[in-house]
Length: 143
Image (cartoon, rainbow, N blue to C red):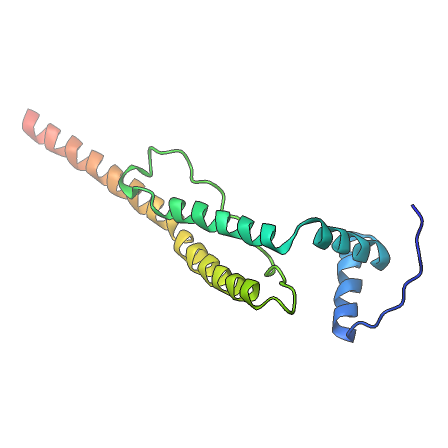
C-alpha cells in the first residue's frame, strides 16, 4: 500500500491520547490514526445513530422482563457499553442533538439494567423461601 506523508496540527492532549492508545495496542501512532480514519470513513454517522437506536430498543425490551419468571428464564441478552460517545460532524446540529438524546437514553437504560442481577438474586431468594415454607407446612400437616 502506498503511503503519503501528510502534515497536520493536533491538540497536544489528543496527540498524547493517540500515543497512549497506540502504546496499549502495541502499534505505531500512524497505524492507529489510519485505523481510526478507516473506521470513521467506513460507517456513516446516520448508520452509527441507527445502530445506537437499535441498541436502545433492545435494551428497553430487556428492561421489560417479567421478573416473576427471571429465575426460570434464559439469561438476559448482553448489555453493550460504548466506551465513548460516537462523534458527530461539527456542522450537523440535528445529528448532534440525536446523539446527545441517545447518550442520555443509553445511560438511563444501562442504569436500569444494572439492577437486574440484584432482582434475579431477590427472586431466587424468595422462591427458595417459598419452597422452604411449603415444605414446613407439609411436615406440619403430616404430623
